[in-house]
Every structure is written in C-alpha cells, then in structure tokens.
Amino acid sequence: MVSLFSKHINNWLDDLPKDPIAQKPNGAFVEDMMKASKQITLRLIALTIYGEAFDEADFLEIIKLSEHHDNLMGAAIFGKPLTSAWFNVLPTKFRRQMNSFLSEWEKLNLRIIQGAREV
Image 1 (spheres, rainbow, N blue to C red):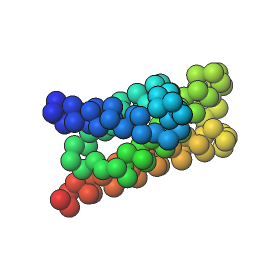
Image 2 (spheres, rainbow, N blue to C red):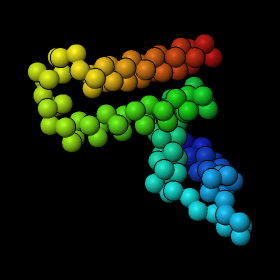
Image 3 (tube, helix red, strand yellow):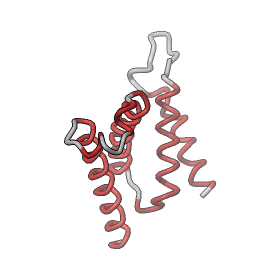
C-alpha cells in the first residue's frame, strides 16, 4: 500500500504545476493547497477502501459527492434546527439534499463493489 500511495503522491506533485488555472506568466505557479491537498487525501482514502476496484471515474464522482457533503455539513453545523430529529422528518430542502447524497453514495459504492466482483 505504501508504494501505491507513494506513486499517487508523486504523480499528484508532478501534476500540480500543470494545472492551467495555477500557471503564471513568469513560469511559476500558484495553487490553492487546501483544495489540492483535499483531492490527494480523498484519492488515498478511496484507494485504501476500494483498492484495485477504484478508477478515475469513481474519483471524479467522489470529488462531486465530497462537495455535496461539505455543503450538507456546513448547513447541519450552522443550522441548529437541521440536527433535530423532528425537523428531519419534514419534507424540507435539506432533507431532500441529504437523501440525494445518501442515494448517490450508495450507488457509487454498489457500482464499485459490482465492478470488483466482475474482475
């Protein structure tokens, strides 16, 4: 696992300066390291959980789900009523978003599991 992590971290580091958004005219680059380090962290966690069944398409889906999750967590942390059991029984926008997230997360996991079984 360590060699796999090392390979992915080295690839990530090599690709940082190639990001067209980060390139500057003088040959230097500026990168949002919070965003960049989150991506490598998510990739390494997914590699640990899914192993060889994990691919680039799955990673893109995980990034999308992570952003959705961040929005839900922000709303839950700063919106006191959202953590109430009674509030979450009601058909609210937050509840629909949470159900959507859970459904997408389940689909992703089931798809990866099915792919691993077929290999």
